[in-house]
Structures are given as C-alpha cells and as structure tokens.
Length: 450
Ligand SMILES: C[S@@+](CC[C@H](N)C(=O)[O-])C[C@H]1O[C@@H](n2cnc3c(N)ncnc32)[C@H](O)[C@@H]1O
Image 1 (cartoon, rainbow, N blue to C red):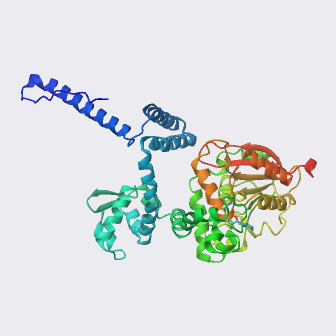
Image 2 (image 1 turned 180 degrees about the vertical axis):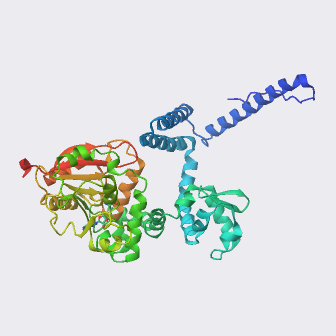
Image 3 (image 1 turned 45 degrees about the horizontal axis):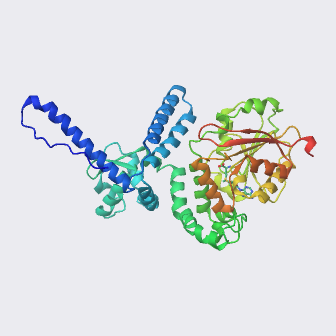
C-alpha cells in the first residue's frame, strides 16, 4: 500500500494556525506510524492479531474486576494466564525466540546475586543502596556488579531510582526466603544440567516415553543406577536443598483445607478419638500439610502421622516444631513395606504418585490398600488432574520435571482411573480446584472390591 502523502506545514507562530498545525502534525505522525507498522508486518517483523489482543485486554480487566469484587483466587489465575497469552500475542515470533535464548541468563544472574549476598543486603534496605556497598560485600569489581544489577533491574529483581543506587522489589525480598533460594539453587546446580542433557538422553532411548525410574534423565546425567530420592539422601546438603525446594514450589498455593470440604467428606464420618489415626501423610516431606491441617482443625482429636524415608525424617526435625503440633513421625519406605498404620481415617498422598510411572505407583497404592479399613478409610490423592486439552503451564512444566527426575508423569482423569482400576481402589470423586491449587482424587477401598 502506497504511503499517503501529507503536505508538510511549518508553524508560523500565529495562534489561529496553531490548532490546524497540531491536527496536521498528528495526522502526519499517525500516517507515518501506520506505514511503519504495515512495513514491519509485511516484513514479518511484527505479527499482531489486534482483535485477539483487544479481547485479551478486556478479559484481563474483567478478571481483575471479579477478583476485586469476590476476592476469589481463581480470577487472579485467569488474569495471569491471559496476561501470558497477551504478552505472547504482542510479541513477534523472532523476539520470542530471542527471549528464549536469554531466559537461562536471568536464572544464572539471580544465582550469582544470591551467592554474592546482594539480595540479603538489598531485601533489608529502606533507602537506596549505592553500588559501592553492594560491591563491598564480597568484595567484587564495581563494574561487574553494575552489569549484574542492570540485568536484575531489567528483570524486576531490583529497582534503580537513581543511577547506581538500588532498592528492593517484592522479588528481591522473595529471593531470601528458604524455599525460593532452594528453587534457584536446585535449578542452577542440578536441573539445568538435566534439561540440557534431555535431547541427548531422549535420542539415546529412541524417543520412547521414559518409564524407568532407575534410568530417567537424572540417572543418565549422574551416571547412577539408584532412584533419585535415594541419591538425594546420600548428601545432607542436597537433601536439605530438595526439601526446601519442595517448600518453595508449594509456597502460597492453597492448602486442601482451603477448598476441599474436609468436614463433610471426612470428619463427619470418622470415629474421632485421640488414640486413633486420623490422617497419615505418606511421603510428606517436611510436613507442611499436616501442620496446616492441625492449625485448621486444632480441636479435632486423632493422630496426625508423617511418613517419609528415614533420611528425610532425620533432616526435617529442624524445619518445623512437629512435636508441638502433635505430629508423629514414622520412617517408612512405601515400596518395601505394607503401610504400618492400620485403619486410619485418611491416607494422604500429595505430589508423590506423580513421581512414579504406573507400575511403581500401583505398588505404593497396593501397600496402602492393605492397611485400609474397607468402607471407612479414605485415600486422598492431591495432584494435578490434567485437563484433556490446554493444560495449564505449571502442570505441564511439572510433568517435564518429574519425567526428568524419576520417569514420573502428571495424569489426566483417564490415567488416574486406569491406575486406580489397576489397584482395585474405587474413585469416589474427582475434585477440581479453581485457582492455583492442585486437584483431589478421593478414593476408598470397599468390601465389594475385596
Ligand atoms: C515430591 S516430594 C512430595 C513431598 C510432600 N508430599 C509435598 O507435597 O511437599 C515426594 C516425597 O516422597 C518421598 N519418598 C520418595 N521415595 C520414598 C519411599 N520409597 N518411601 C517413602 N517416601 C518416599 C520423598 O522423600 C519426598 O518427601
């Protein structure tokens, strides 16, 4: 399309001509911008779907309004997902790839800043911190620190109100929290290598779907033949980091008691007695979920029991005061032994079965089933239930992470149903949480299934 010519007019200082001059100038400018955009679109430098962009902007605004009026987190999640789509729609494909190229650098810079204790100092600051103070921490070359800070500021990890002086942001403050530090460290120290080797590994196994927990990308990278959790247990630092990593991955996500009707579906049908096992959290990690349960139902009698590998039980002692919360601990290998706590009200598994392919997951479930009181004990599995289309990003990324770690997988309804059929457990209901939480599969072992 030929560019429309607009006659160039000079402002002669006369008030009468001022408005006309402005109008013509704006017209000339918009014509130029329009022509420029058109040229870029034709040159495939910008590919924009304006109606889609407008509709995403409207959706985001509507979700935020709904969040404001209801306080319900599900609308915030909708807004976040649409914002990602909007950013993608505004980006041209070439820039998207360039961004991909640079993405790992952000993580690495965050890790370096953490190592240099920049976040420790910055997160406490109430007035701008000069570059010289940040450089003095190690000490480091101020020119290097300036370059690091530039990247951090550009990526929201700090603010620079005046040149070479820095203020914390919400992200810099988060970067001193145990769980978030562990996320960055785990990725930098371990996961980046696994991800980097994934193409090589998948090629080596002829693009089969990984289904052997003793030969996942994890074992391929470390050249070991033990499962990932046994490997983690061999170093106290690594195990500690992993348990903190799990906390970081969990933080701020809803607890099942936030949305699942625990009283109606569980407590109302239980014999509540201080000596009877009420809730057994199997593969519980540091026990965050049990602690939260106790704080939600402080007066409900019944034993709360945390089970995990012996090394984990040893590691978690310092993390929370489990004893004060009345949480018992039992070291237990869910593959090797039948569940030692019989007839509990609830056997609870959160983010455990996704670590394992079906054969292994079925073994875990069979060992639990033998301890369940038919028609009384419930099995509560808190995991993602993948929708059949358009699964959310967090669930897909977690699916990849567990594949890498132990040939695990996230499951959709069909896969969950197949797994439960395999083990003779009956699904009572799939519970889909709206918001940032995971889903629940409520199951039991009935007399008829024996
Ligand atoms: C992904 S973490 C989930 C932790 C916790 N449920 C959560 O959601 O934060 C899996 C847990 O399973 C435990 N685990 C792995 N293998 C186990 C085994 N053979 N017996 C018992 N626990 C095991 C790990 O130590 C770890 O705490």
